[in-house]
Amino acid sequence: MPFNYRKSAGNISTRRSRGKKATQFKLGHKPKWTTSTEIHQPGVSSASSEAPKASKRLVRLTDKEAWDSQFVRTTAGLAQADTLAYTLRPKPEKEEKTDCECDRNENFIVNNEKMLALIKDVHASGCKKPNVKMKVTRAGLCDYICVKCSNCGFNSQTLPMSDTIQTARGPPAGFLNYLEAMPVLKSKIGMDDVATVLTWLNIKAPCKQTFQKKFNDLGQAQTELSDKQLELNQDYVANVMKKAGFEPEVDIQFDVAYTCRPQGGCEKSTQSFGALVEHNTGQKLPLAIAMANKHCIERYCRHDNCSKTFAAEASIASSERVLLHRSLDKVKDGPLAVKSITTDSGTQSEKAILDYNELKKQTNHLKKQTATHYKCFVHKLRALERHVRAAKSDIKSIPKKYNKDEYMRKLASCLRCRVRIELERLRKQSCSDELFLRSAKFAIENILHCFSGDHKMCKERSRVCTYRVTSSYKHLCPTESH
Image (cartoon, rainbow, N blue to C red; front, side, top):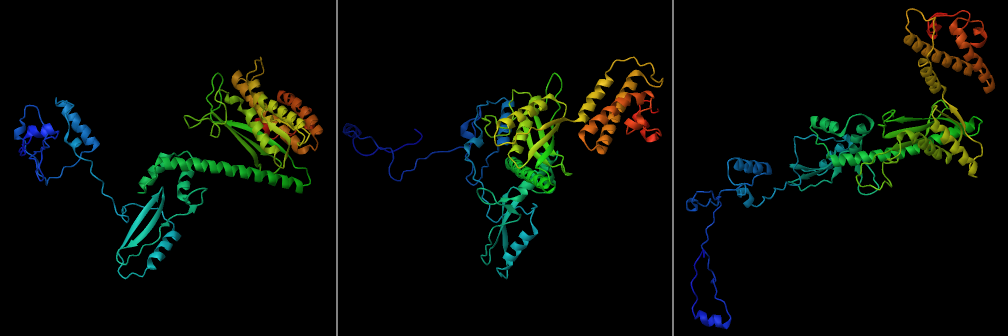
């Protein structure tokens, strides 16, 4: 036993027979226990250890210091299971700061009008000997400041130092947090770059969770604003067509852009973007936008309402047909009707337009006329240039300063440029489609005769080559001379 006690009076055996236990303590008795905080070391007698003074303050080690201390003891050959002194100490309580303390060496972003309102509020107290302290509440980059005077007891209301915007739920949100996420959404910089710039300015950057949330909210808000603007564009084009004396039917263009161009044999693209653009007015306004995305940021997501809008097992190269369907569905519910669609020379667009025309015929509330499909001649000319460069022909009249590959490359480029200029000038001069098609056929047939040196029909059929050929048109011929 570590202590002694005095036996109580009476017969112990008699008490045991009565079922009562002997008492070990008396009222006011204090056992003489000895305490020691020294760690027992192997080979060291515990009798030589002395208890530390009560006035000495024991400081709890940090996690890093504790890990390093344990590492030193392990490398020194001591048992790893020994208990360190810091594990026996209670965790010290953190000293709470007063409400009006803040870091004076930190910079804030404040609005001039908000700061002027705070100064007027402080001066309204009329204190002759002000002892002002400031309380700062942070919400990202937005700060809320409250001023308190210890002499007169003045306590101002908490005022935001930046503009706020109304949210669907909760108090108004700070506008600076959304402005901070704007360059990340519209440029190539990232969140870490913005935090680095704020650190250079001695401004405390918000946490990444807040930054990511504002970034997602801003992207969603931008999508909603884009949809509203597209509806306004449709109304504007319909109003312009009516005032010009035409039916609200538009000619639109459609093309798809990929994040990474699909390659033969493998596909690296995961996102695609397609837009319908009208070309009746001079502004070339977008009327509908559709996107295909195969990724979602959530690990366990049902994909009911998220960023994933395209099946993961489907090929992104087939998204052109899907995006065209989605864009046309957005336009058909508006005030405009699609008169013609101009696309590239791909086969997916043609299949999508055929399905769209069949749907218009089957639906009663839609107009029965079908949309005319045009293929962009610029894409056709690109295909023409590729075929001419890959053609295998024995041309004996190649100039000596050119080899065969270089001459075929220059011939394909000049042929493409010549056809484009001929068609553009004919379209400006022709009033009807029949006249344009007939003149374009003769002009294209005359190009080969012109390149071979026969200019008999150039005056009648060509809009580029004439009897008096100027030097400005020589680059349209492969040999730079007629």
